Structures are given as C-alpha cells and as structure tokens.
Length: 362
Image 1 (cartoon, rainbow, N blue to C red):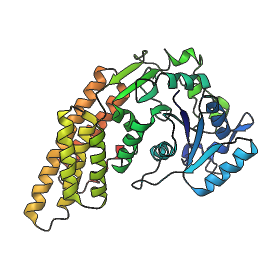
Image 2 (image 1 turned 135 degrees about the horizontal axis):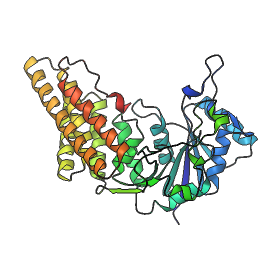
Image 3 (image 1 turned 60 degrees about the vertical axis):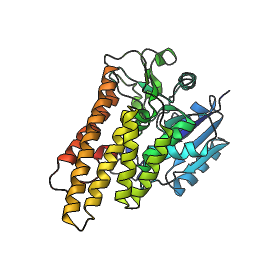
Image 4 (image 1 turned 180 degrees about the vertical axis):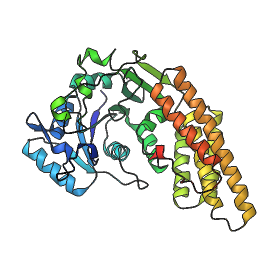
C-alpha cells in the first residue's frame, strides 16, 4: 500500500485576518470551538495518513507550534522551517520543503486555516490519485483549491523544485506542470462525502470564525475533469534547473542557450507549459544579457532575439490556454492567458525598463 503524508502549510502572514488596532495574531493558533486551527488541521489528516509535516517560515513559529502540539498531546508531528529557494516565499516553498522531507508516495497539502476538512474527503482524493500526478478540487465556476491537493511525490518534487528555481511562486503552476491531473468536482463528487462542503471553509478573516459559511459557487462545470497532456519531460526539467542556476549566477548568455535548447526539445514534444516557460526564460536571459553588453550592436541584437523568444513563449502559452478551454479547465486557461499577456507586454516594451519577473509569477 502506498504511503501517505500530509503537508500542513502555515508560513503566511495572514494579513486579511489582522485587526489594525491589535497586535499581530498567528491565525493557526486562534481557537475555533475550543481548539487552535492548527490542531484541527492535524486531527483532520491523522486518521488517513502515516506522516504529518507542518511547514513554517521561521524558528520562532516552530518553537511556538511545538509548545501547542505538546499541550494538545499531538505527537509524532514533524515541524520544518521552509528551505529558502531563489528568494521565494509562500506556499510553494512549504510544499517543496515537505516533499523533500517525506518518504511518502503521495502527499496531501493543506493550509492550516481549513479546520473542517473531512477525513473522508481527503481519503477519497488519495484514492483518486492512482493514475494521476495531481488531484485538486474544482468548483463549478472553474476555481481550484490550489493549496488542497494530493501530489504524487517523486514527479511533483521535481516539478516543484524546477518552478522554485525558475522563480515561479504560484502553486497552480504545479498543476499545469504536472500535465496529468484530475480536477475533481466539489459538487458532483466530493459532496458525496461532505454534503454541505464544509471541508473548504477558509478562515480568512476574524468574522469567518463565527460565520463558517461554505463557499457558494455557480457555474457550468459540474463533472470532474481528467487532463492528460503527455509524459513528464524529466530530463528537460533537470536541464531547466541547470539553466535557472546559470541565470541566477548572472551567466545570461549561457542561460539563454540552455533555455533555448530545452525549448526546442519541448516544442517538438508539444509540451506547451514547459516549452513556454523555457522560451520565456530564454527571452528574459537575453534581455538581461543585453543590458550588460558594452557594444551597442550586440546589445541590440540580444534584445531583439530576447523579444522574439518572448513572443514565441506567448504563442505557446496561448496554445496551452486553448487546450484548457477546450477541456473546460477555466482557471488554468486564465492563468495561461495571463502568462501570455505578460510575455507580450515585455516583448513590446520599448523602454527596456520592465521588471523581468511578471507580477503573475510572484
């Protein structure tokens, strides 16, 4: 039987939860019906996994959580501090930290602010992951619960590491990069195990502690969607990691060549997401390199090549969006189109002053 782990993500600032007139509160330690949200998260996953990992962002938080776990007799819980990667923060770094640490075959990720997640829902998501790399809940309007996923560890670890090295902090990129995913319907499938869909109640504000209102979502997508967009290009992912390391060392010409080589191979395989990322980073590398060039002619040539690469990336992101649209993957199509528009914006910028990291990637 495949080993299961849970990765609880609790490294955020909880800005929406704060009261400006009061001291900062760690949302995970706020009580709901007599127990901290963190303890409720632990209790909800314990009966369906063999290992529980809590990922936090600093030593102080780790020490505080250790005391809370001890007080509530929550034993055999691993507390980890997020490993820094390319100056990124946020949930994707916690996911990477947890994946590196566990020996489980499949991992369930969840934020610490979803205190009513039903074990039956988690178990069903694990059971649905046999032939796929990622299982993520989807609402009828296409929205995804992008922090509440089942991940197949070996492959998704490589995906997440690559994304972090490339400076892409959005957890939905893990879904896009996995290629083989199940978008599991909340209303048509998960509701069987949780009729009121309380599992997906988020505590975002202090008012949510008393409201406990399930999400109301209307839309046309009521069936689960299975997307299989090809084999995971493992060799290219490792080449992308090498190229990202070159870029981060400001070796922009070498990085552009490495990204271009990856893009060419991935375009032949019609792996749209990874091909587009490769071309985008080729373009960013060339534009960065052009700013280091002392010879104006070479600088202009590199800038022109960089913008061409970005436009090619935009076209490939557009193809990715069309694939999702045809499959009714509304949210993923929106994300791909956002990347397309950013690449076009940078390619068409005439001032040369654009930041080389799009807002959508932060």
